[in-house]
Image: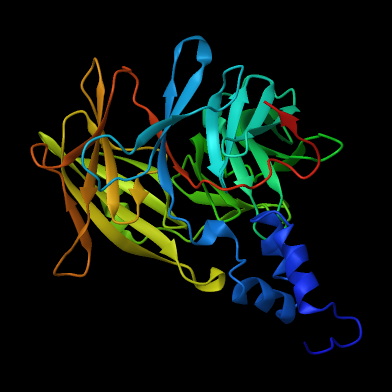
Length: 379
């Protein structure tokens, strides 16, 4: 064994130290220390397990008394329903806000609960946020800082004054951010410019950034590395805007680790979905058309908030008394776009839900990531 230079620990103790760190937040931050530490993580297959694990669909089912159950789908391509299993979230009810690195965030009115079903650990945060509803909450994680955060998006009305006095009222967005594990347990407020008012709800969380849509159909973002200001995202291309001007519904989502927008255009008896993705370096981001989902029937929509899992697209058909979850495979098209054509007779039914309300679908990876580095409690 070669002797280490002054100030450097030997290789074996370094690897032992890395093995004792959290698999995602700890090892990912260790890679940023120096080149040697990065190589120790990568060369010994100690890279964060989240980077190689394939995300699985997780269905959030709203039950009576505000309780929520969850089911994980292990194999979308398999036959039958043997690949579906129920997981226990946390005692006391709640509704799923989001998932990050195998952790699941639940909303319980004034409380936030973060749970890892694999390790059976939960973290309870009493944050007194009022009654925002889960549609205005986001569960965020920044890969560089390793911090988990809750984002509460508020639309407030403010008075506008001129020299003549009060002139009118205008909408303004306040993004409240709570860092989990922070000893102060206080919300930081980031006020967006008055023109960046929220449309309906938080759109998506992707790679350390929360996105939402303004009333004038602009996409804006809040980067959680510093939580300093709200900025505008590169405008959509004319081709996407032209589709949005028609009879359609659209929503932000996450597609393969990138920000995506899915635009559903309605025909007489069917509907199509065009998916665009923002990709490239941060200084040269561009929107590109990713794929098309064709031939959706009345009552059938792509799953929300996550519908893309590798080469599989999930749709949900609400039959009134129950819901059917379908999987569709993407096929290469002659113009280099991937196309999924919905066929109610041949497409595979992954699951039949007895609940009347459509389940929410989240992207989930099972890991042993600790719930929080500061304090934990057994469920």
